Amino acid sequence: QVPPEILGIKAIRVNSYLEALGVLVTHRAGIDSNCLRPNLSSLHCLSHRDQS
View 1 (tube, rainbow, N blue to C red):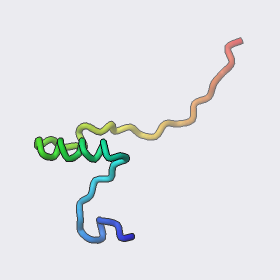
View 2 (cartoon, rainbow, N blue to C red; view 1 turned 30 degrees about the vertical axis):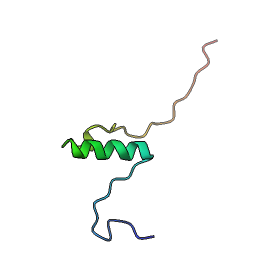
View 3 (spheres, one colour; view 1 turned 90 degrees about the horizontal axis):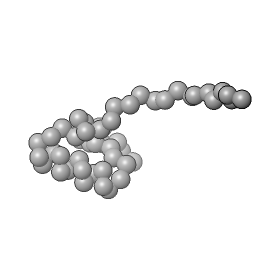
């Protein structure tokens, strides 16, 4: 497989067909789909303390 970047294609990776549809709809409406995506950093491991 050849990644789209090597071919000079600007591609947006999505996780489902529904998300791809949302990207297409926002593009047609002139909305930047990156504005609608959550921008969360990775979560750190949380510890649980027993309160007994």
